[in-house]
Image 1 (spheres, helix red, strand yellow):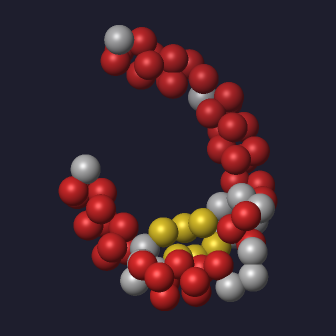
Image 2 (cartoon, rainbow, N blue to C red):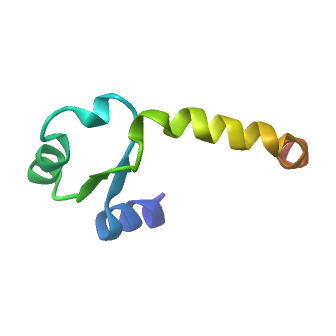
Length: 69
């Protein structure tokens, strides 16, 4: 959606995961796209932490998923 694209252009992206830690990747992304990119704190663990949070609040997520159907 256009509103997401404008947010990305204005605010940049936060990179996660192992690949995000390739040397100079944020700089390369900026040079090629003009979009600022930064590494998340503890980028390697973001997915695991997010999964843990989702599991802790599974009842809330289930209600949201069921409501969308």
